[in-house]
Image (tube, rainbow, N blue to C red; front, side, top):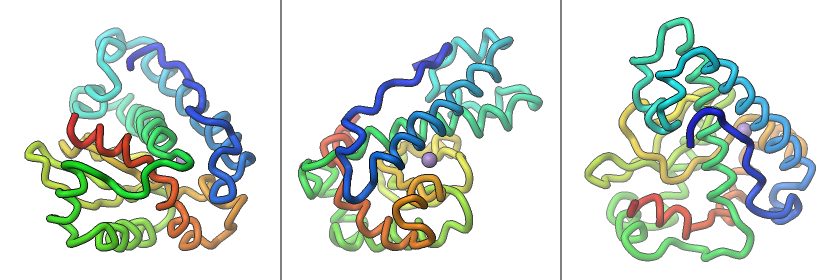
Length: 203
Ligand code: MN3
């Protein structure tokens, strides 16, 4: 994926994730918030052919090569596009309720159990002050960890490969849960499309 960026359709029906996430939330989150990140990323890159030539992943991995005057816009809007595409892709109704294969083994090895992983990601997501994400990432050796990030910062910039992310910006849950971030986080785990996570892990 590279410039000019286009808004891909939501990979399922807007009401597919109800009752955990409402169609109204997904309309705003995908059609307004993500669309704005796509538009603003294109504007930020409009006069930079060398940045246009990079894939989005390359761009976020080499932020140090982005001119200082564009860097904040690329971090915020490039991250906003990448992070949201992952967020929407990794959710699905009625998928497998647990990972299988190499990711399952790695989760057990790192966190003790799937519940151990959920506890750690919940702690990260709840501990993120203000807007941001909780993440399941791995390093180049496939070693898993849970991290949190502020705003639209993406772990790619730290040479970490994102496997799952949990958007805890208020726009992700406020219509459905108001200030109850914990209820949203708790229910969100039931939406994880473990097939997508597994594919990202064994890439
Ligand atoms: Mn969001």
